[in-house]
Amino acid sequence: MQVPVVIERLPGNRFRAKSASIQSFAVEGASAEESLLLWRERFSSVLPADAVIVRVESPPAAEHPLARFAGSLKDDPLFDEWQEAIEEYRRKCDVEAGLP
Image (tube, rainbow, N blue to C red):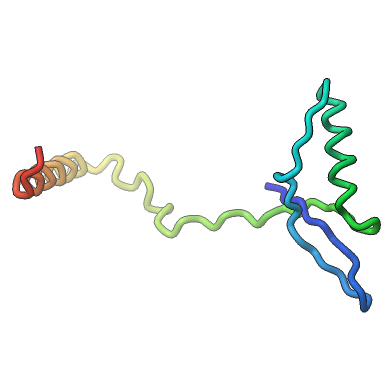
């Protein structure tokens, strides 16, 4: 996923990079092209003249620690029995708790 980032020049020869909050800018036009043109005009009017917008690729999501076990019981003959035992236990707990 790409994230828009605005880079601004600051006093003291420093720079600030921040996420662009583009969601708050909404405009309407008679056509898709006009609405995009109006959006660009409005968005650029709030940025400093020397600001630059870049797109940064977000890091890929880390694999879930249990993902490597997914599907490992697919062909295990005890899996169905295990699932039935879980359902039976839950029904028993519901009865004891007075649930329907």
